[in-house]
Length: 128
Image (cartoon, rainbow, N blue to C red):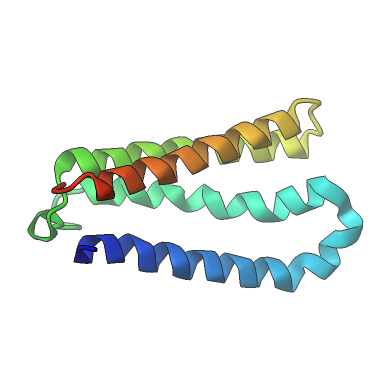
């Protein structure tokens, strides 16, 4: 596995472990709040996925020496921003107790998963 693959693997592993620890620490208080309460605790983490935009800012990150192409960075940015917007909409629907709130939470999660798989496929496709 190339070093740039480790970059994502380590980052995602640490993020997953951190989010799991936070969730497990608040879970006892969420048990009585039901499915909506759990979703209200889990979705806000994705509000901050807009940080992928910083990958396209000149002078902020210079990932070209690591082998990351502009196309790859655009894929990161577009997927992260889309998932962040869907997370905000999904959370708003939860707050309004909309009848489509669970369907939209599923859509948000499926798109988020596809975003991760898209990034993974870029990493596995060879030189970026």
